[in-house]
Length: 86
Image (cartoon, rainbow, N blue to C red; front, top):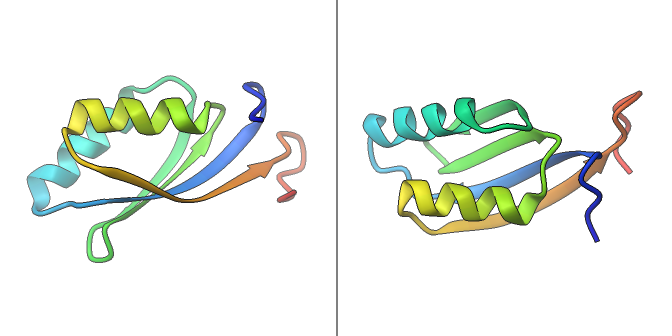
């Protein structure tokens, strides 16, 4: 079970074909509430997102807006105060 007020770091795999796909994904992530930081690795088609969000809801929103399959590879819960991984 995921707690909404907690900070999560999630790694996803999204097929990013070109630079336009990366720009579109970056624009989507910047406009989402709860997302604090993100890292897009175009070569390995991986996206790392950290912030206060519900991981399943975030991946569904990205899938709908990008019209691409989103595969969640890893979810880490981090405490919001000191940043240690649980």
